[in-house]
Length: 135
Image 1 (cartoon, rainbow, N blue to C red):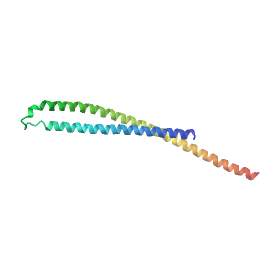
Image 2: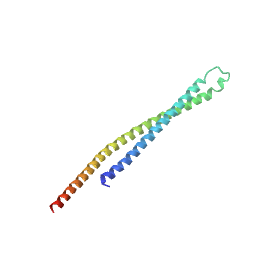
Image 3: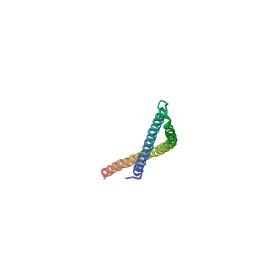
Image 4: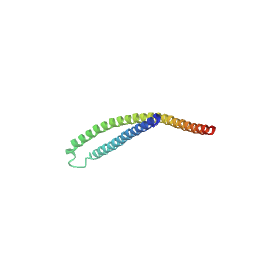
């Protein structure tokens, strides 16, 4: 295997790893968004339960407020994690695009090398037949 073919094969493996890294980060972001939606649903349920129609309403206000505070902290943490995941996704995409560009250049060089090799073989074949006809 020629040097260009080996380089192309290595770049294909690197590109595959870069794609997997990007997909993993995208999966994490989706998971964080689902977690955020669950936090928002929990907050909405807590706010809805703050109604005054129950005689025991005052007994649970402290627990509900604590639940809202916990949700707020979880929401802020989730927001920071989402922002970090988005930064990692952008970095993974940049890396992937860079590898794709280098891989494309390597593919062109490999194709040119193959074409040159085929041309040499054809010329050598013609020269070999020409020598045998002159003898």
